[in-house]
Length: 469
Image 1 (cartoon, rainbow, N blue to C red):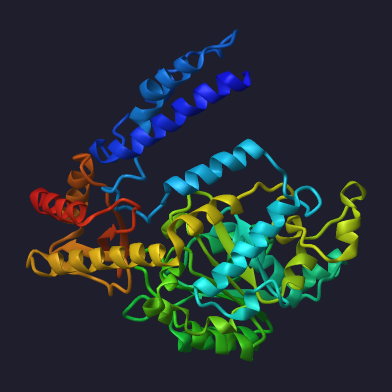
Image 2: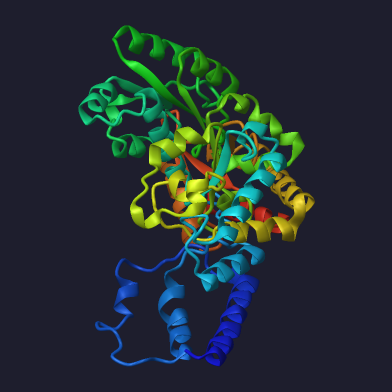
């Protein structure tokens, strides 16, 4: 593709994206294609010769678009926000165009230093402890998802607990005694991380929750004491700020005090809800975070930065680096040997890494702190509005506290009625909601936080829900 052909195609692609975002709310939210339908529209064999850009775009509309669920639609209220925004799209595009490999500082210094600087900005923007800044012993790194962050934190905790042993036999003997803790409401990524880390799900203790679905510290201490008496070694606990099912906020301070008392690594998972701390009035969610060894949140959920973009901060970066560093001859260089730079390949599982920080930098510069705060406040206000509409209708009930932007509600009646209600809502194509189970009951979830969502979309969704009863 010549520079001129690329320029022409690039302009057309941007025009297409702009038109898509402009008209997205008119599209059916949830795809209704049958399994295999997309593949049936594609030729059995790849093209033997080059095809023009116009043909690619024609098939984008014919093949791809019917099979998409539109996560950027202002009528998407399922799961969690997965926001993109125009500045983040531009940052992603430029990152792809640059095509740099940021595994070492030496392989692209700007890729590393922009990331370090922007993540230091975010420490202040979110009101997080200064210990997470790169100017001290801590620091931040961009991961793909919170699942990767919790795995890295777990591995670092494992190595710290076992003395960073290189002897495989000694390490195996130590890890057999390790146990980790989290609540029954924590994301399933921790169970997967336990498997990957060689510890197994049997070593993960699920702690009971209170009436608000938050971890009970007294129940945690009972589990810890029982394991210690059995000769086991408690080494890791995960607290959640905004659980997936109900947006519950664990009592991080009380959990952190137990972690300190028993020498455990405290990881705080604030995947979606951490963004709320951009607003000073919501920083109560961070109470106790100063006790954390690691903390993560996802700008790709509620901070208008397209997937994937997760931030992991650690209090002591040496624990993470000592866990993950491997230095073959072909990666050795003077900058690394000087000790004056960060090589982010030592901060996560993959060696390779792309310029994720560019889109995050663009988002912060486009909106500014005040613009980001205004959007978060707007979404929380819309959630408060929706909750009031539910409470005003005697046919429905709110079944969990609403700390931020997620409302858990259900039709008064049995689970079958609620399942049918959700099926009718989603089959309409006019909105998309998801569900969970709380206290054994089928519950509908209304997650509000899409980039373009307005009050009229929330009211239209409520009208649809009422029509579907």
